[in-house]
Image (cartoon, rainbow, N blue to C red; front, side, top):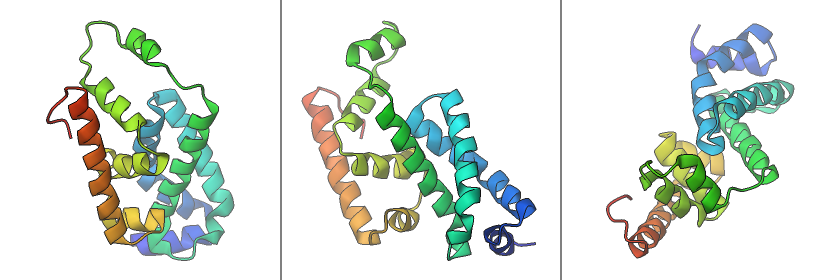
Length: 172
């Protein structure tokens, strides 16, 4: 059975088809969760929660070919909700966690990303951490592809400026 047929059956709430769709997409869902939550346990929990939420609402999907996109969007919304609920780390807590011998390049990138609005952070995560295509980002964000491209360009320019002001070159 091809993927499209499987997705159509899953939307009709056939349990086996739904489980197969989740199985095919679990890696993407986990990576998306991990990109946001940065914690294995929380990411696994997110996949479980999103699976339940998706099963309850799968009948609302209108186009089977966008099922994966729909699942990723649910995951992103869930992760953003979780991040809002959690206390944000201060820079000193992050430094303490990393220890003095760690390479601070990742910390600098994370700090740079933190200055961005949530919508721009989502674009960067989808494009560069999840390898999501611009076409799929446009569908997820419900904006034209040209808008995705221009926002990515603007966001990357902002990140470059921030990092160059901090003395970090050639990261973005």
